[in-house]
Image 1: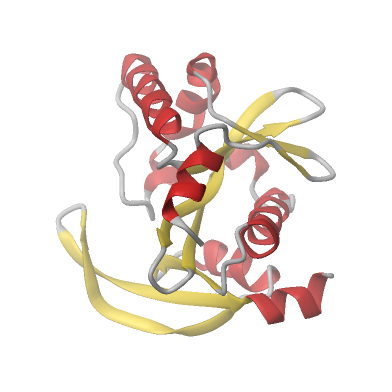
Image 2 (image 1 turned 90 degrees about the horizontal axis):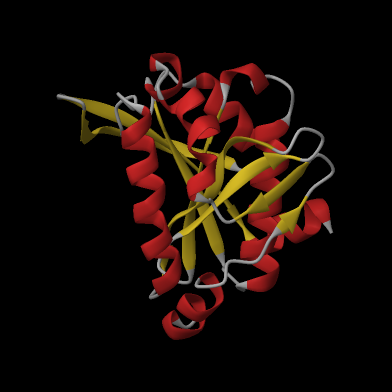
Length: 193
């Protein structure tokens, strides 16, 4: 996994498909859909960021992301439900570890879609892209302990629980225990391909 090749690829982030979703570049015009979930405390409770306080903040964030897409150093897709063309969340790589040929996947989903299998569907597609297109060796995901719903998504995607890093992240004013799950390329290929 070469940094220059990755930046070139993600500067024109490819659209990905699943049965019910199109994973595509986020657009500034997604601001209403994003704000609808990003403003909700129940969505951000276990995330690193606070709820969006205004629709203008969401617009500003999406404008900022356009500059990140242009440089190719942003690896996150909008999740568009194909039947409604509504942006219902995001999924992508929060980090790429070029030195160790690894990545971390992250996701957020509108609560109206929780429990319907959209998150595992999106995560599996991103894992497939990471292993098959980027030739990543290992992909991990992290969650704040207590976010059992997120851990279940990881396990539904074939990830193995590795353990808890005690008080390893300072989030929203306090130290949090962070759970880690991961999957290796050969495990993914054996399970899904």
